[in-house]
Image (cartoon, rainbow, N blue to C red; front, side, top):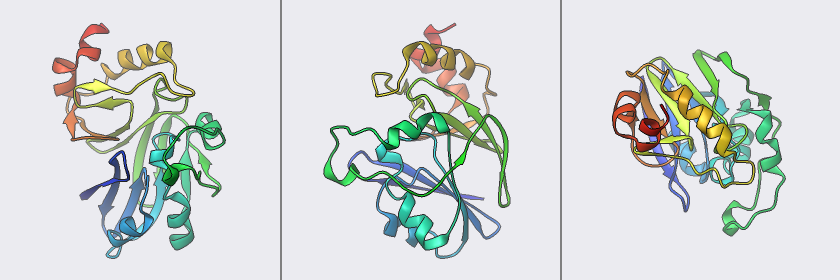
Length: 200
């Protein structure tokens, strides 16, 4: 198994390409579709999963769908984010128009990848964690040393408090790959992240 992290766009949003046995799963293709495609030359892409619907995580979706004819998965509670007009740099004005498959909590099979999905609202109404084996893709909900903002269009501080409580139930061995910045582990965050320490 190989995980390619390629920060994309103005906000250095982490796009992850999970490769195994000749296949690839794309997590949060936020920008620069052509650059992402260069990382896919040795594998067969089987799908795109979005941890949430914010513009900096989705702008390369249409380009990848057009190139590979692969399905897109997103939580339906973030569909409104595809429609709202916000003050964003010009490169983020477009929203993807490809149809998507609605994510819901529970197991999810995409090609050869057996995933687990957890609903973790707060940063956005449709934020999810995506788990594969010992790996957890956390989007903008959990970062190394901090958590995502809740003063976003459909963010919810009350929901985030519940999500933070829930994170404490995750196995400490999970390796966390966040939407921005470097990787960490649940164990490290439970002992050092002030937002998780406060929410007993």
